[in-house]
Length: 326
Image 1 (cartoon, rainbow, N blue to C red):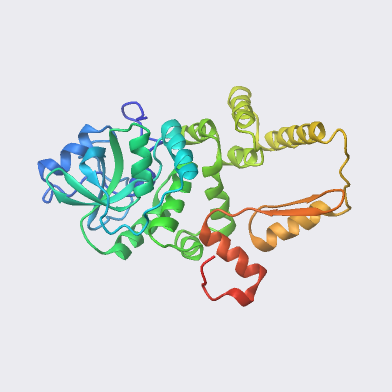
Image 2: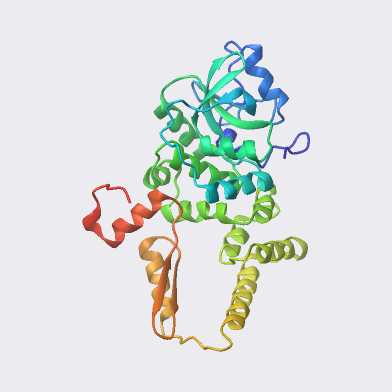
């Protein structure tokens, strides 16, 4: 999964792209340095990208997976088998975009702090090393704030950026509002970037490698079939298709697929249906699809994370803004 010599890796880094790849020389022991230099993600003396703020009490390394043990006080004991299977497939095809967070407990021993699902999936995928943020302090807020600061400064590819957003939201309890404020993005832009994680593995690889732009990737999100996503992505790369032209191709393909599935029964088209869907999308700051059938209609509202779903529910029903879990 590593890139060629001299190239910055496009996969497997996520938040690891925002912090140094080893502890300060004064604090590093041979045990600190060997995993980073031996597991294939960038040497221990690789410095943080120019312009990034230092991250006190943490560094990035690729650790042997058998040196890590789960946290004894992990509250989650049940892991959904279907979701785990999807994650294993993603790790196998694309690599691990979101590093785990660990603390060091011995010369060659680490304990998980965050990311047990990713650790388990990496084991099932047969990885021998795993990208990790090694936290040397107990100050989660300090690490979160430093990562947010560096996310504002760093030039990540779209998939790395999406993975960083997802991990900050999931592991560090960061909110969409905090992300938007700290890195100067709008909430819809953050939600749209997070949706890139839903692309097929083959398309994700192209985005990470820089041969497919974020605009092309967002256009492909409306294509539900993964094989069709891949074929369209291949055409974009081979023919140099623009984002606007790809949007037109996707619209035509969607129309043809819809026509084949509705040959025996036409679906009524109400005037202004697209406009209503667009108004809902603007109001909820996410993609909304409106379908009208023969006897009833359906509204599909997309969301990126549980936090994003709570935000959407609050917009729909302000009376429920009491932080009750869904």
